[in-house]
Length: 225
Image (cartoon, rainbow, N blue to C red; front, top):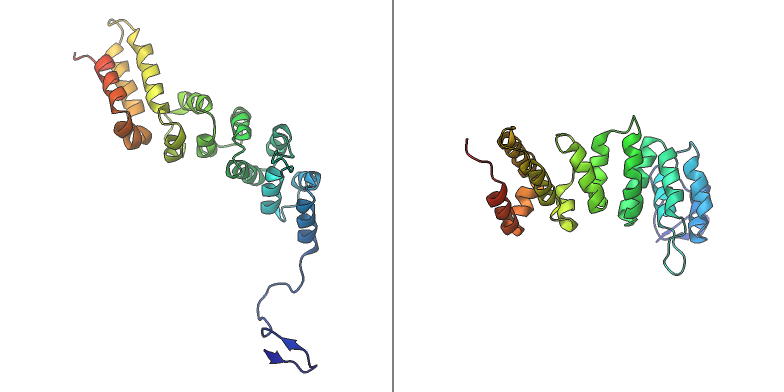
């Protein structure tokens, strides 16, 4: 302890930092709104041009719950805010949805994000792992030949272990219907090259689904010319 000139005692000496001495009143208001579960405060904040306290606002807006643990803000309302937000705020909201496990929201917004002319496809690749199996398959069918998708294969294989194998089998079955007079062998090899090159098949499929892969090799391997 140190005694000050006016006789008061202070536990710690004065702090020599640039931190403000007073609690920001906007921060205090947001904390009170969060405690009172006033979702409309955060909705209005996220619709405003101000970016102050965006990190807190996005997280609270997505995660507010009732006493029965149900979410206060419905999916549709969050989706509306996401699609009308500027890119930086939109990405924060999507990350908040993934962290809060509100994956149905991520799954529903993918088609809308693909239609946004200014939304880069690699950004969708970064979040596609949080979607349903059918959404992931649909995305890969359309874009698997892209090399810049930034897909988190480790996250996909955690809960969707057979997606790449299923898509490989799907394409092989389609190619197998082509007559030998067409370039069946070339298409078969292209299918193997396309899907076996995915890191998920290398890192996980060969270890845990070797029987299914061997069955595919036996059934659909390219014929020697």
